[in-house]
Image 1 (cartoon, rainbow, N blue to C red):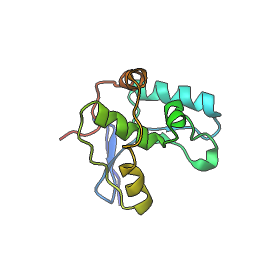
Image 2 (image 1 turned 120 degrees about the horizontal axis):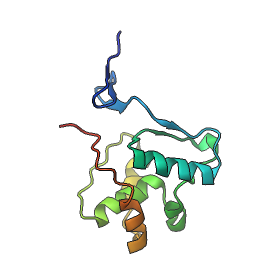
Image 3 (image 1 turned 30 degrees about the vertical axis):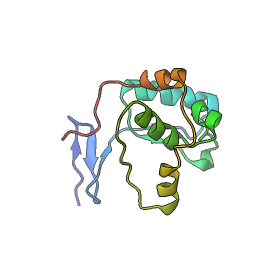
Image 4 (image 1 turned 90 degrees about the vertical axis):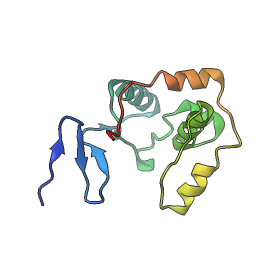
Amino acid sequence: MTTEFDFENKTVLLNSGYEMPVLGLGTWTQDDETAEKSVYEALKDGYRLIDTAQYYGNETIMDIAKDHGKTPAQVILRWHLQAGYVTIPGSQNPDHILENYSIFDFELTDEEMQRMAELHTGQRYENW
């Protein structure tokens, strides 16, 4: 099978039918502070694929998440809701489905909302 990259949109179509960015940021050797700065800069620059893993020991890159005792995904979902966006995350994993719904017991401060809004680059991942 030949995989074709869509260089205009910087994506590749996976066998599952989903598109994935062709370039991402790896965080394997980075400590928490370095990873946080790298991910922040990468998101500002347009990256939408960030490689982290619990095994790397640097998944605490979002201070905001640590402040609320939530995962980065939960903080992002909460940000969307507080910003007035309906959010429909997909998952087949029962734990993630519950995690996604467990975002109504905390609130982001105005400062946290602003910090996250500043990450917006004006680029869309979807092209439909």
